[in-house]
Length: 320
Ligand code: XIL
Image 1 (cartoon, rainbow, N blue to C red):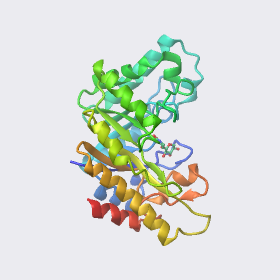
Image 2: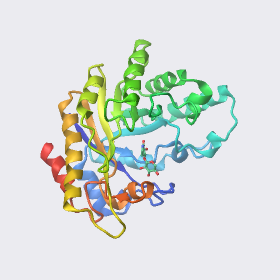
Image 3: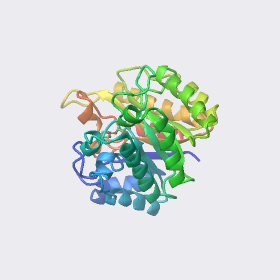
Image 4: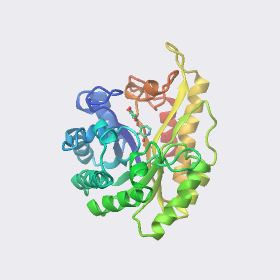
């Protein structure tokens, strides 16, 4: 039942990926996307700034194309994301709305977007990155929590569930691979929400890793304690970046280390019963976000720019 997924790059409306979705014009990309994955995630195409560029305007064409591609290729889709502090449009962040207006805007957004794809999205990252590293809620930079209080998190899940009762609804975050203050905050919050009848189905770990740091050896233990709460779990955005000076190639040792991180993450997921989705955040360096975001780091995916396979690709294949 384990789905193997990738983010789908592009869309053409975003500064880091100012090109259309590569599956529409890059045949090598399209063939790998169709053949090697059983799940796809929009890398940017469902973020507020992209899908909801003005208060009364939704832009669905790019996501519609991803969903159609997925259906043609018998893939499931992960929805990403509805409630986040980042990649929000200026009309929202600088809008001076009343609390009632903001609540109505969020509800309309969730019900419009989730409703449009009802029955076509397997899992939704409803709430993304709601905690700081120390386990406190993002009360300053998350507009919803700041303006409407923490109770709005439960409403976001309820509204999504109303709009698509079959979709599985997740929390998603980075820096929660191991047992730490942030993952502990989710261990505390989710049972509280479930006790109130809030429809939370899963906890997802993004998995943006770097060979600069050690592999989070307690990943499996951490996934298991969420599984023990009766939740589905998932790895949703794994990539493993490496230090690469401009114009140089990573060494064989770096590539082996990268391969082992990918494989250990997949093995951890496979070992946990309800860990049912393992998604890499892009499958080729050609379109990866990493060099744009992390200066001096790159080559984080499982395929080179020309789609030839790295040791990481074979390591994943070996575990499947
Ligand atoms: C990233 C995309 O990959 C980039 O193209 C974009 O410029 C910024 O966002 N956590 C998430 C993802 O939940 O949505 C982010 O994706 C990476 C970190």
